[in-house]
Image 1: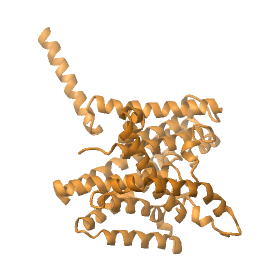
Image 2 (image 1 turned 135 degrees about the vertical axis):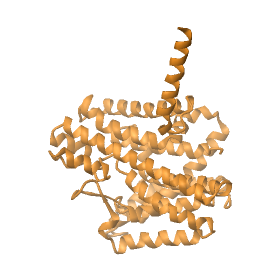
Image 3 (image 1 turned 180 degrees about the vertical axis):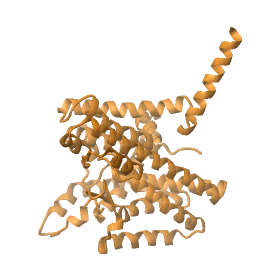
Image 4 (image 1 turned 90 degrees about the vertical axis):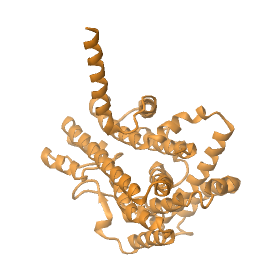
Length: 376
């Protein structure tokens, strides 16, 4: 399947947004991707995950079958479980290398002496360190997507969209404990997945209708208007939201844990505008200009796991926090370069599926041994 390089570049930009925030918040490196009010890499990551899922699985259901699509979804859910469990286990290990205050400062998790409990929490996805805690929400949305794709195949995209909106409204009007994801048992609530799903599910619908609605062409045509609207909102929205005379008690509109409606609108507006801009950049220039973004974005899940692991491991074994601005920026650039190098390596050596890597290594070793035996 031909990849949309603008979407890959957007995902790469979302990864940089998260890396720069986690490693170099408050520096010039983080400023460009955090200058638009109430927009960040997490919103873009979740939205683009839903969009790509819709585009890809529409093709798979048409080319193969619904059963094939659901099978691939099941595999992806298993991969997400493994990735989140690995991040949790890294947090368990880091906790043994640090004091309680140091660990709580970087992981925002409880520091408990019982390592067995922490391993159990990690394996049951209840030990979610800061900077590596969104894959559980992603996994939940993928499970919901199994039912959504079953409806989309039957042309019932309005039902999927309506159900998503209803669940979002319910999450705000009648919030329940089962809607909230906690970073650890009896610890902080970090995401209301019932609210966040609206970004993922609405993007899934758009991705499913990507060609039918001629979205790339429509976005390209409307790009000047999108840029103008985005700039107008960027320069005015924070003043309006923060003004008690205009919108008193408006914190719920911008809350990140509960995903206020302003964040939903801003996410779709910014991602749509940037898609149009990156499409034109790729059209007018050599593709290598955006290669770091495109390559990293094509392996965005790998990059997310790498940055989450580095965020825990670097303070534990290399450089203690707090970091100076120069060190923070250097680490952010280094971690992103590592993500890019890993993505390029997977492309260079044809590593499509990581679970096949051990098998390939065994085969290569066996081939080398046979060659040595023949020579001898």
